[in-house]
Image (cartoon, rainbow, N blue to C red; front, side):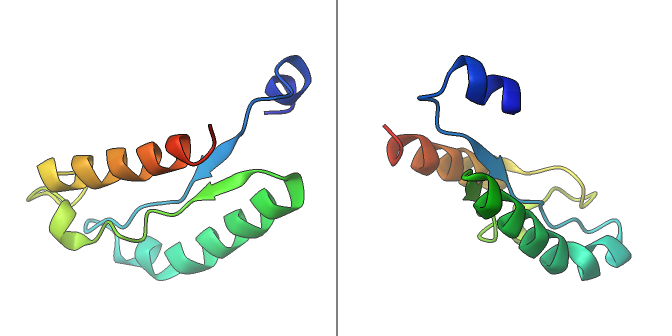
Length: 87
């Protein structure tokens, strides 16, 4: 990211939050804490944090790891929102 900042200083950078998963309960228990760390990291570096907390279990396929159609649409919407609000 530092290279991007140096070579393209007018570029707005964003870091996407981690997503929920159904295949690993232990990871989900740590998800909120990790996303809080990511938020602080982004804030301290002047980067945007792309919040994906609107993506829940209903957005995952039957295996609980990959997005279903709804999940893909919500993720794309989150990225679109970030892009549209930074141009």
